Every structure is written in C-alpha cells, then in structure tokens.
Length: 370
Image (cartoon, rainbow, N blue to C red; front, top):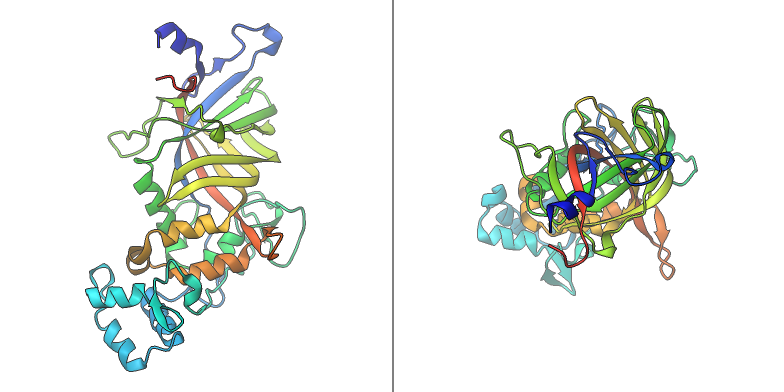
C-alpha cells in the first residue's frame, strides 16, 4: 500500500479532527473522531442495601449445597471438601467438584451440564438504581433508575442476576473483579474494538452517528500498562462485523444514542465470543483529554454470557468465586427478551457495559489487502 493510498483511506483522528468532506462540497463536510476501546466492563453500581438477602456465599458453601443436592452423603462431602484449597485443591477434590453434576445417577461435568446440579438460588439485586436504559419502553417493579441520568424503567436483567456476587460488586470508580480480569487478560490477545463518532461540528450541538468496528490489529500498551493512545488500526473488512451507525445527538459534550440499533463484534471466548447486541443504546461523555467514556446497553444472548463463565471452569469458581451452575440458572431466570418460538423461554438478557474510548486512528482496507 502506498503512502498516498493510505492517506486516502484515513477516516478519523481523535488526536486532531479530520474533515471527511475534504474532497466534497463544503456543505457536505463532516468531522469524525475514532477511538479504540480501552475498557469494556459490566456497568456495576453496588451500594449498601441493594442485596437485601445478602451477598451470595463463596464457592465452598455452594459446592457443599450442590453436592448434597445430588445425593452425595455428608461424610463423603466432608472428605471432598477437606481437600479444597481454591486453585491448589487436591486432584481428587477438583475432580469431584468439576463432576458434581448427576445424569442418570452418574457424575458429569457441571459446567457442560449445569442443569445436572440443583439450583441453589442466587440472591438478586433488588435495589432502586442500576446503570442502563429503558429498552422495552415499559415500567415494571423489576426496573431500575439510572443513578446518573435519572432515567426510569431501566432494564438490566444481567445486573439483577449477577450483581450480588462479591466478584461482580463495583462502581464507576471501582471496576468489578470478574469483568476486570476477563477484559484485561484478553484485550492483548483479541483484535481491538473501535468506534467512530461523526458529526457536522464537534463544537456545536447536533445530530451524531456512532459506528462500531472491529480492527485487524490488537491493542498495544504504554509504559503504564494502559492502552496506547493515537495508535493506527485497520478496520476489518469482513461484512460480519460491518455495523450500521447508531444515530443520536451531541449536546454539551454528551453523546446520547436514542435510536436503538445493533452491534456485532467478534471477541474472545474468555471474555465474549461475540458482542451480539440488539436494541443498543449509548451515552458517551467527550473528555477534555481526548478520551471518552460512558454506558452501552442493550440485549445480548444470555447463553453467550454463560459461556464467559463456563469456559473458564474450575478456575473461575475456585479463585474468582462464581458458582457456574448458579450463574446458568440466574441468567436463564432473568433473561427478558426474544422468546424462543418453540419453548417460549427468553433467549436474551438486558445488560449494560461501561465503555472507555482512547483516541486512535482508523483506516479502511479492501478485503484481502495487507
């Protein structure tokens, strides 16, 4: 690729705004800024009293209840749990815990067959506040109020299902352990996620479009371990990850997407195999340092979320502290959209993520082009 063709494909610079209409009539000129996703985390909002039934027990207690529930004698349970030392448990204990499920009376892997273990019942978040959006246009007793915007009728079934786990507790200032670990471990390995904001003039209020894209390259880090700013990424030309721009407004430095759309981005099995979000809404604050941050909400397939947990298996349970069959039951119970036409069970769950954008350059390439 020549330097001239590279320059012609330059879409945006978050370090300095580029006019996409340089070669078009002045009336059609627009400004765009691109960002690479630096953080993508569950939008946690924990506070005293939001889990009136208490925080879910740590795995050791859950294991005992589940082993008892499948008929393991108490004496055998005590023998199994005597070797439980988290990630350093004895091989016999690890094997017994992993295969604590029962199908036709025979031990099976509880992560692959979560219904082979009884539902011990995760406590659910019953507080008033949670981050997100009113996705269904309705107001019910299970809806929340967004603590920042005051929007009522907020749908966030994922937070209701998982927010009373200790490793999911967090806030805007304190990242939840579960998602912090998954995202930070995988952003070095998976292709970067990008988004581009386009408007007529960033110095004025008006309509905007936000387009999410998948990069061909991975992120790199600076000396402090943060995502390096002003890096250049090639947009993946694969049509599977070509997203229609989300439409919204820019007002007083805040971008609000209020016309729901869809986002499809491939990820990583340990984080999300694919971000497959329907009825997506977004709000972003443009910061003076060139970064942006906000909340992205919508519906995602709940089984994809379970796979994040189930694929990590015993290590996630014993060291991070999420009981996996319990997560499966909780996610299924609080799924709230897109019912299966045959079973009637909901296949998607409402959720919200905290997203941080770091200034970047995005360039387009043709399919098969290096």
